[in-house]
Amino acid sequence: TRGQDESLIKILSPAKDKGNGTLKKGREMWIYNPKINRTTRIPPSMMSQGWQGSDISYNELSKNDDELKLYTHKMIGTDTNDGKKVHVVECVPKKGAPVVWGMIKIHIREDNIILKSEFFDEEFQLVKTADASQIQMMGGKLLPKVTKVTEASNLEKYTLLENQTVEYNAEVSDRLFTIYNLQNPRR
Image: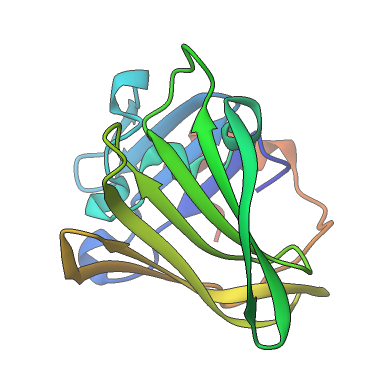
């Protein structure tokens, strides 16, 4: 990633998905499937669909700051976790905001680590939860190593994201975030 506007994701395993990729530039996103050698632009209408069949949407994958811009925020409580204060923030969409969620509750530790995000539909029914764990130093910053996204309707079904390595302020070429590189990654 570079900032919040550019990201490139390449699947390395399992073998059946190897080579698949996702490129985000600004508000636009493309996916590449090497089996059919095809790149497809993701239209806005599909941004709430699950990425690679996971519990994470293309919108969430794009890591933009919509939660800051399109929602109003209210502190609704505090808790503790591992001896640290945790603030619970309720995010409700602003009137007319083009968002998927009817409400989001975010549990933020006092050192700015997001421990949990709960996503609710328009009727305020819980749809899914993202839980962060294994908080540790990575790339010189304190981060969750693991995030588990679980559907509320089926606790057996989840998507697990695990950071292996993180590097900040790395020199990244502009050529990295191109459709050509999405299709033909450098080895």
